Image (cartoon, rainbow, N blue to C red):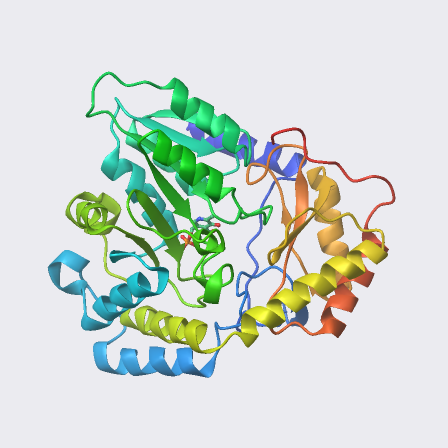
Length: 401
Ligand SMILES: Cc1ncc(COP(=O)(O)O)c(C=O)c1O
């Protein structure tokens, strides 16, 4: 079949361009060390920021929920998949982030698809940061809305797009979606300025806080909270339960009018099975820990500071990120792959992130830190990076990347 041959050719091209991706079979929980191919490696690439994914409260809650409710919900939320654990989790999330209401999704990817596709049609405008997560870009394709993208974190450019788009028909809608913490760069969006622009231009602001929820802002309430904002009025917040929360699933929180619209109309909510009760129960436990313990975030922040200080002393160029995501820019994919392989030989797993996940020429080692890392772990990481990083100036981000 001709197109089967085309696929084979594209595989070969991808391999030649050093863009081929391989699956690793992990043989342990995603802690500070991880077992891969029979070897224990120091893990610097998981999103288990607070080291909660194997915390005894979460595993006990998941086991108890499995005992009571079984391994699957076997139905969508609107049929018989929505249990009282899901209900409690939605209420807990809403209260925690200061929203009127929240709704659960089975993944953050699906939640991101849901929001623009539920609210926008082909006469509407969807404005996005250029470095938004792939799921938000995909949502733009599915929503039919006119897509405008602004230079990364440039609130002035975003505001200009909103101001320049004057609708004659009051029924036409504008929505601006941004990552809260950018997944591959670790910087936090300028939410104060974006929030003000959205307010000035009758635009709904949606913050995808997949990497902020649990770690950024007061008690980990997220990036909006860092700016003293909440998901109220015309602001919606999306969070995933699979990163700092250490579980699985996602939520969107905001005023009831928006959340009810998602429950009524969002296809990625309606036409899929509700997430397992074990995941909902573990998430509830994690949010209780966010409220009762601050030491996990403090320790994570100490680790971030320690890494940045050591990297600086070692002459390793870091970005301005103050979060657990600390990218080391390398440039081309082949070099990034080689560095990742050399780190592995030194007992460290830190994956090379290549296009199309990041722009061409901006391949990187995406270092992520977690609460359970020790100073010795971080010392070992920095020494290893210094040993394997090619000498010479790393690429800097182009203007407005
Ligand atoms: C910014 C961002 N949004 C959304 C998602 C998707 O979340 P999930 O893994 O729950 O589907 C991710 C995860 O990779 C992400 O980095």
